[in-house]
Amino acid sequence: MGVANRRRGEVSAVIDGREARLCLTLGALAELEDAFACEDMGALARRFSGGRLSARDLLRILAAGLRGAGTAVSDAEVAAMRVEGGAAGAARVAAELLTSAFGAAEDAAPGP
Image 1: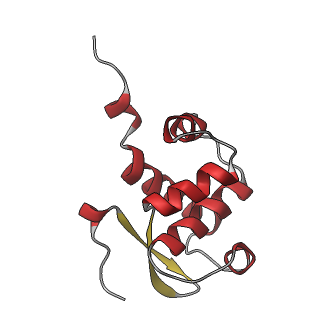
Image 2 (image 1 turned 30 degrees about the vertical axis):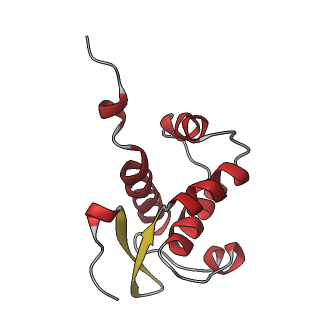
Image 3 (image 1 turned 90 degrees about the horizontal axis):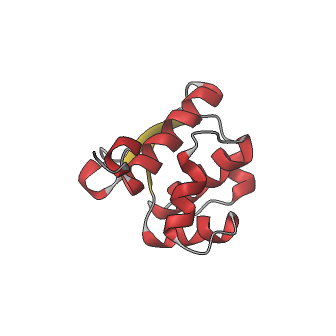
């Protein structure tokens, strides 16, 4: 697998000992809207803006990111995978994916 293209919103992670590429495409974001019962991308962005993610949240984000990058994988398969760095590593990957999709929180805040 090649290096992630940050300009296209791709993120790299080591999962089950192999380099993986993840990306929150529009389809992946639509999947997350459904999973989190958000009516639009603004509601989805607000859902994640608090910075508090459950293990289930991480699972859904990583699974959507893997599928968005072209890996055919179920949520159950992702739940059994090992992300380098454990839960903290999974949180870092999810944060990178969300930042690539929505921008940094400080970028979204209105200025004075």
